[in-house]
Image: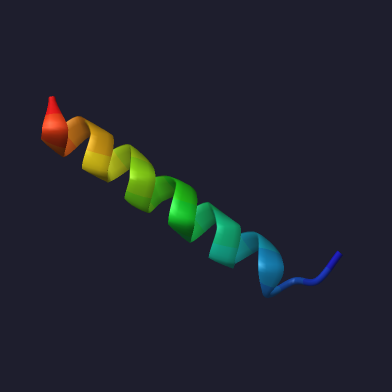
Length: 24
């Protein structure tokens, strides 16, 4: 597992979560 891959995916997930919360 690449160390740089996890933070990237995590960042995307957080971005989506924040967008979803903002849409509420």
